[in-house]
Length: 388
Ligand SMILES: Cc1ncc(COP(=O)(O)O)c(C=O)c1O
Image 1 (cartoon, rainbow, N blue to C red):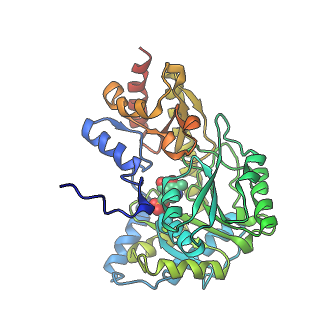
Image 2: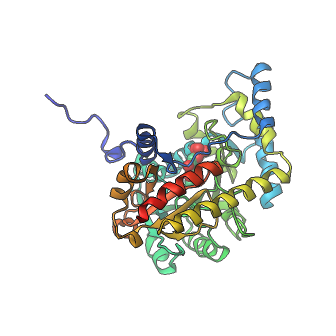
């Protein structure tokens, strides 16, 4: 006799994430994995050494709930150095288990059941789950290729008297879009007028290309006092398995998030906290060469995808590029990705899973370029088979 699923209705429909599904497909088929966004090279050697030193120095017990002071100070110094944001490391900075925990804790701490959260689709999958866990409702604003620009009318229409916060990701996964200052000003104006909070996910803050700038929403007029800024070390230092993230902003917001966070994990990653405190102080040369290397890989993969006959939407940031498969005579991105390992020996992710508006997302497919050059080249060579 089969029992009904024990899963709470709040989480119905949030089964295995598409990343796990596609990575399992890559492992099973031996395909080149251009699906999940994790780098296939290690982070900086001196940061790895700093973790080993911290382990050997006995930093292996619970760190303080808000994070070790050295890391909170390093995060505050990083925000000042790169963004001109001033923070008190005691109360305005909170260390979390990756950005994922910061996002979930923020939604749980700040939303009542019945509240609405304005976000942009396609959205990172943990947003929908976090909003659902909090008992809130998502109100997506649709971004469409080729440029994924914000439509001011659609943005205004997404707000209602029930809107509690805007959850904004820039640079944006999966599109690679970097919100312009003008677009952020539209968001800020809505937040100010309607007295709404903002939570920003800036995990790709150091991956912005072609001389463009990453503008934290918190730096816009009237936004510092209502914005919780979230980021993490995973992407910036190619250490996604360490799960050291943070949330910064006004004391009351950070304290609310800490209240939720302390019952999720309380704390984590003692030796890694020490190592990331070191990493955040690396010289500008590290951040510049990391960005330049990733920009070169973007160019390499975009060229390969174009040669394979896809319509390519060149990203301004992140490690992802989205494409439209219709020039290949197909229009179902999900079916395309399921068949791609067999047809071409490559794994990619169907962007439709990040859209509520399935029609917009249907023909779109995301590829990741945070891979070694030879892996990108091999993936591109295999994709070239699609043309024949
Ligand atoms: C937009 C976005 N936010 C958050 C995360 C997760 O960050 P972390 O690994 O620090 O939890 C990712 C990882 O892919 C991401 O793409």
